[in-house]
Length: 353
Image 1 (cartoon, rainbow, N blue to C red):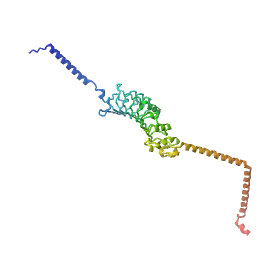
Image 2: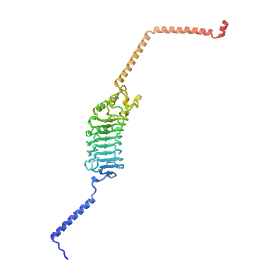
Image 3: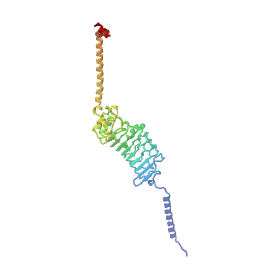
Image 4: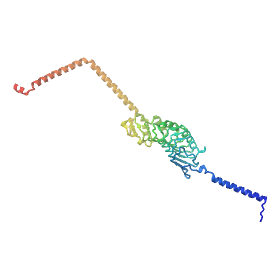
């Protein structure tokens, strides 16, 4: 049986064949193409798409994961060996991430380069606690206009304290709400001006702060909404603590005020700062007391000089008086000596009788 196809039928079959080939090629491409970056989970990390959390713990990586999914809202990187946070470390293919929380604690970070957090314009919380920061660029936190909470507990080495002050003065941190700097051996508040932030909580626990200067106290009075935590600091309780002492007494801005203890001088050691008396920190009284001691010393010196002058002017009479006393003592001693010789042997007294 012979089957004849017309020219139109041949064209139709050819068209169907082309469509089938195109579909087959599309399926092959889909199967062979790599998985999209938005859905991929970085190696050695655990991803929870529902909560938007990517957790990367431990490992030998020395950099932040570069293939962070775009859906990530919380990134936790801990236990890595990330010595340096490089510029744009979180820029994935030059695109910004919608991440809101970033934890980089316990990674041994030593250096934060300029614009290290570029590409995170929606970041609200940044945790850099328990690192070993030796160098912090003045532009380290640039590009974080929405940052609300910054944790730098037990991270800043003494060599980087001055750099920290410059880094925190960035205008991009104007919305900072909570700043934690516990355990960093700070000797003063590392903020140039408190009124340039929207700070509500400032944690300075367990540092090396001995005094809070009058200028900082004035700023605290002006920023009534700030709560400052200052326990476990070695306060030097002398008259220079006066303005801070009265701030503690008259303000409720220090929730842990009852735990603030004096470390020096020794006479006031372990005494709560709140329990000091007003005269203990009164510079006026302390100055008056010092002046009083000086005046007393001058008066005693004048009395001594006058006494010596009297002795000098009456040296002749004093000499005669001393000679008279000496002669009287000598006569008296001769009388006692004579009586002693007479009464030394009781038997002679009986014979005389």
